[in-house]
Image 1 (cartoon, rainbow, N blue to C red):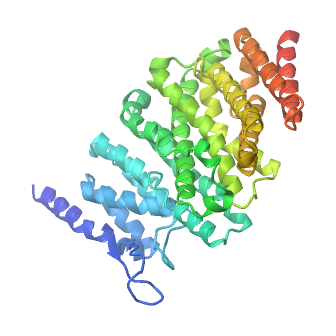
Image 2: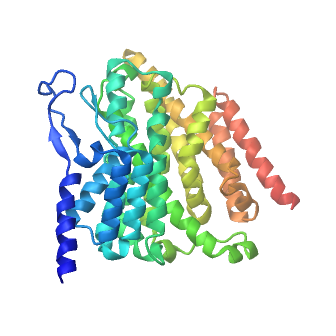
Length: 436
């Protein structure tokens, strides 16, 4: 009993090292911040790294960390995952990436001594994705006109890849049969990340790039792109686990799909996932225009889309019926955009400049959807979509219908070359299937 009381006292005494202490003083002037932004750091973050490691090792040895300590550790890890955290002219103190990973490894080793909801909450909060504070820096630089080539949206979105990797690894390995136990617990968060605060592309047609630079909406949209990527990555990680478990079945049946009950997915969540994939493409287009046009380069645009859509291709491949629904959704969206464009051509000349901007945005959105579809069809890693289409007659027919309709919509327009590339790729896939 004495040992238990000693351990309890040590755990409680450690809490003070990790508590975030607020300060509203500017580091350069020593005066109170005009904006009232708080610089928060803990005693632990000011210690040398070898001492930090000893403190975390002590937590691991004592086991059963308190809820307040778990929350403080999550906050410290979240700060470390951010691209860059500013409060006025001061960069907030944070631990190194290696120390953040060590904290998570120690907490993972203690997961059986922590209630599962507390541990899952720690993992989600430690990723920093819920707040995505690095987007504040991007927004500030946009408003000041200080963006550089390295300040593109990809740098901010993909700076969270390390956090997403850790989150997916620890979630999928948190317990045996994690998809059945963990996925239902985190589904509300995943849906929130996929749907909350989505950028209104219709409203954006009346907003110029100059206006968007001054809009707080830009940072919010980048945050949503980070959260969408994280949510899709988590779902894809659970899907890959099931693929690994059923590898022998996959070898015998190349058309294998993951059973719906395994991932606890349903038609409602499938719809949310498809909407988020479409939205990711459209919001990216609008932000690229506002961020100075550095993503007008088609190579950079394709590289960005390929990284954003990577997790989505896994779900499109292994969720039964999702790829066919995606093909139809893309076709309907492009048809809708083209219909809007032609309708605008017949409208009053009094709003000619506004119509021109709207037609430009509609064209850009149609282009990005065709580019995304091309990338998905060409995808080879980590899985091949074309191999699925070749072996599935229903998908082959659906793909041919969609490509023919898109080519008809784009005929005679300046996007005709892109629809031609799409048609060529589709024919290659289908002819390969016929040859086999």
